[in-house]
Length: 455
Image (cartoon, rainbow, N blue to C red; front, side, top):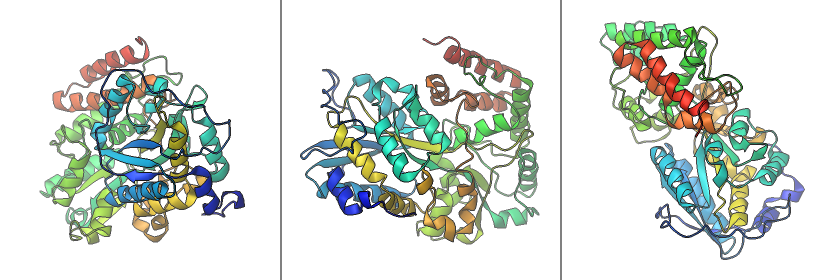
């Protein structure tokens, strides 16, 4: 992926950044409460390459990837970084569901991991705890090119980068071609209305259903129901982020579509409590025909032996459908924030720079087998995307994604709405009650408390 700048040869890079020894056990995330955060050392000169301090110890808190090989690779790189210099990097992993409460607890305590992997717009939500890393991002831009607009918007608050762009987990539909054919269906649905029609056809043949989460799934539910809202023309807030606009005819159309699709059995009615692992497990168990997901279902069937390739020959992927006002995508996004309480900020920055080195990052991308996509132009895709045409629907959405709260720019309020699952809960309440207007009104009141009556 491009040439290596002579000034940043791998040998010089390792010497310049310093590198750290990896303690890989997932120890306690939060130190005991009390006391003041450790004082930050004198920062490096603006624009200077950060250097690891010999003897430093840092921790990075991240989620457990749905592709274990990706986590193995980051641990390998942490050890490589460690062994090259006398420091210790500990990679702490928690499930994606635990990441938000662990992050909130660390911010509340004013202590914890030096680096936290943040979903979506969390750098805006926790802006007072995130260090300004604009100099570091500018270094990476100089090496790797422009930043994807979604990662950029999530990382930048008030003109400053509060996190380093890390990756996207692009979403598409994974489905069973054999069951599709048994239902008499030839093409995968390309509109939301076709989804409803195809789902009814599957039900009429007593075949496993299409299934999508209506629970508090940080990935699957968020990435499903926001696009449904947008594709019917609904918006939760005005473009300036000041006025709640959820109560509209367009939102009513989206919610009524969901109610009709649910009641007809076109989508499974057993997903109200589903978290992100549940649709994966259901697919591998043969309980569903199709679902919206990252590439992990496909990867597990095709590229690992975990399922003995049970459905590998009949598993395919397809793009997001269109609505009456176009097609929208929302991908799961991760970025890395260096926390203000860290007493080893320079070492933390040096480690992040190391992870984003083009050679290292490409190894991590390839280990993830198409599950992740890079945030910088030079890191846009893994080799496997060029080798496996069935992964193309995931690659195609990397540059097209929106964010929770769109068309408003990411902010503390949009992040609050996302972590509270206001939009997802609106759809869940509507399908279970059958009362679209009440569900929308409830969401409207919640959103007004977030956007119009900030505490």
